[in-house]
Image 1 (tube, rainbow over the protein chains, first blue to last red):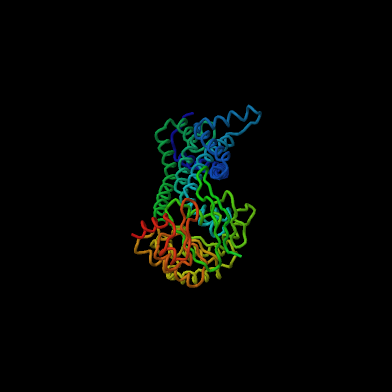
Image 2 (cartoon, one colour):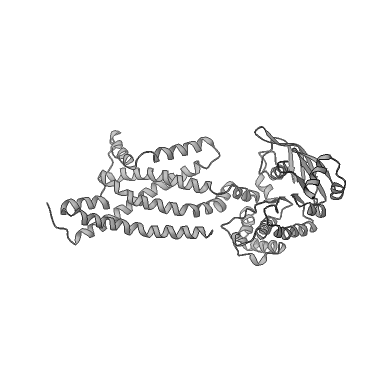
Length: 216
Length: 243
C-alpha cells in the first residue's frame, strides 16, 4: 500500500541507524582480534607465518565484500546451519575488516625502524617489553588515522547488508521509498544520516593526522 | 679475568665474511678505540659483543657470560653493557626522562621515583639536566646523543660500547659529545669505541686497534700506534685520514 511520506519516516530512518552502528561495532569486534593476529603473524621472523598472513590478506581483499556476504548467507545453510541475516552479515564484515585492519596494522608495525628494536634490546628489554613500551605505542600513532579512515568505509559498506535482508539504514530506506514512492527524498535523508555519522570521523582523522605530523 | 674476551670470533653474512678471526681481551678500566675503513668489521665487532649480531664460531665472553651461547641470558648481559648508536635511536614517543627511566624501571624493576633520580644524575653528567621534560625531536643531534649516553649510563653498565657516535653529527656538535666521553673516561668507565676522531682516540684511548679485512691488523698504545705504525696498511690508512 502506498502512503505519503510523513514526519515519522525520518524517525524510522534514525532508528534504523542504530543497526548500522551495531553492525559496524560487531564487524570491528570480530575483525579487530583477527586483524591483530594477522598483523602479528605478518611481522614474525617465521617465513611461513608471514606467508600465511599475506595469503589471507590477499584472498580476502581479492574477493568483493558483496561476495563474502553471499558466501556466508548462502554458505552456512549448505552445511545445514541456518543463520539469520545479521549473523551472516557479521561474519562477512568481520572477515572483510580483519584483512584490511590486519594490513594497516602490519604496515604500521613494520614501519617502526629496526633501530628502535635494537635500542630497546640494548638496554635489556625482552621481546614483549619491546613491543609493549617501544614498538606498539609508536605503531598506534601511525595506524590510527588509516584505522579511523577504514571505519568510515566500513560504516558506509554496511549498507551492503541490505541485500541479505538485514534491516539497517539503507534497507529501511529501501522499504520507506517503496511504500511512499518518494525515493529521492528518502535517499537524501539516508545519505544525510550516513554523512552525519562519517563526517565527525573525517574531522577526527584529520585532527589525528595533524597531530601525528607534529611528531608526538 | 678479562671483562671482555674474544677467541677466534668469526662473523659471516651468508658467504660474506665480516670478521675472519678476532682475538681480543679487554680489562676493566681500559679505553679502547677501534679505527679502520668502513666495511672493515669494526661496527660488527661492537654489535657482536652485546649480542645484537650472532657469531658463527669462536668464543665471546663478556663479564663471564658466554654471548655466543644461545642459552645465555642476553637480557641480563645487555643491562650491564651500555650501547650508544651512531643515529642516537632515542624513543621518539617518550620524553627525555622516560627515555632514560624505561630501562631501570622495566628491566631492573626499579621504583619510578628512584629511576627518575637516576635519570637526573645521568643527565647532569652529560650536562642536560634542564632538558629532562623535552622530547627527542626538540633536541639537537648533539643533545640527543648525550641523552642516549645518559640512557645507557642510567643502567649502571660495567662497560660501554660506542658505535661511531659522532659520525652523524654536524661538526660543531661533535665537541660536546666528545667532552662527555672524556669525562666518563676520567671517571674510570671501561669503554670500547669505534671512531673516526683520531685526535680523540690519541688523547683518551689506552689502546688503539686497527681493523682491516675482518681482523685486528695492528694494535698498540695510543702514542706508539700513531707515532710509529708498524704495518703498511695502517700507515696508508693514517695517511689518508690525518691529511
